[in-house]
Amino acid sequence: ARRGEAPGSLDATKSSVTQAPPDSKSATSGKRETGRDLETPMRQSSLDLSEARLAAYCSAKGRMLASFVGFKRAHDEVWLACRADVLDAAMKRLRMFVLRSKAQLDDAGAAGMVALGLAGEAAARRLREASAEAADMPPWTHRRVEGDASLVRLPDAAGRARWLWAGPAEAAESLLAA
Image (tube, rainbow, N blue to C red; front, side):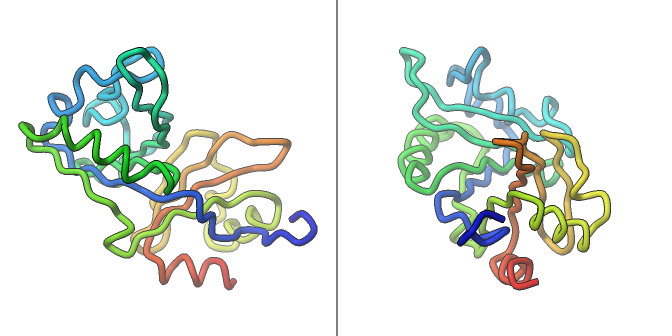
């Protein structure tokens, strides 16, 4: 960890959106993602339970309005993690497109779930203590970890390994206290 920085501290700039998408393809068709429709990471058949990927909500002109890390926690549950400061606006816009579908968008934070950004060697040690293979996952891999939590291995940045952990707030506190 860098001087004065907690090795795996709560990243207040992240939050999460949950979508339970029985009909997510029709809910998001026409919304653009860099090079593809936004439906691609949310379509049940296109995202495996062990994968994670980037997604974006773009304007009609192709300008990115919100970016997400998308992963499936179950066969019928897709999570989109995004920054908290764009969450409300992104959900408001996306909900306009799911009115006639069976998809449902919810703020997972309202259900007591949080997202943590973990980075560096101290975070890797902590994750190895919890699960030997969790710290050594390849980038863009998703894995369910203890309890109701999910772990996504993100690409390294500035030579530091990074993960996105999403789960119950109580489990997050115990992970950070360890």
